[in-house]
Image (cartoon, rainbow, N blue to C red; front, top):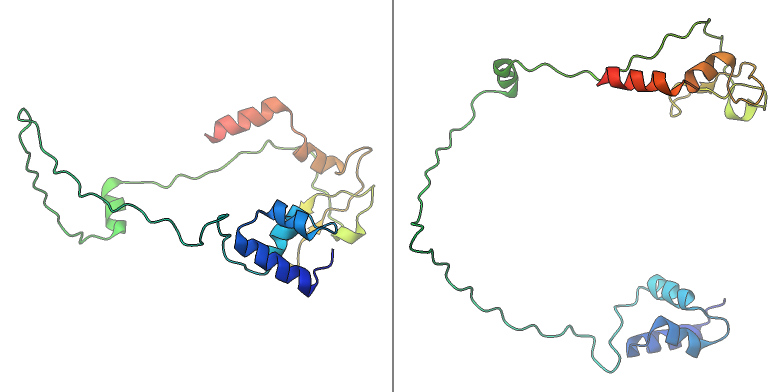
Length: 181
């Protein structure tokens, strides 16, 4: 779809008149879709569309009436609340000591897996094959990031050791999650 200068000018004119994007697309013809019109309007940063037959000005709002005074029922006398505000002179450390707060540690105990930790071959993403372990090691944002790269088991993306970590029975996962709470 080519936007010629002539088409762009016609689009601007029709948009200012308040036509919808579908109506403009129909008048432009030549395979111009409603979405193409909307996209071009946004790229041209055209102002909001005028209402058909109206002006672009926002409708005048009625002036707000002053709120009626709130009166209390005679059964409920007015209450006066006095509040004393004392500035805090203690630091938050002192406050924690006074309350004897202890930090909560979120630790999850993982089941102990028998077997020796495999020696990683430190492969990059481009070095991985169908038969190498794809277990990520380290932070992907650092240069030290790599994949295990040991021989993987049949029909598994991981070596024997990492498969035990990745595929744990449901009951053990639930027990570990419950213990962490």
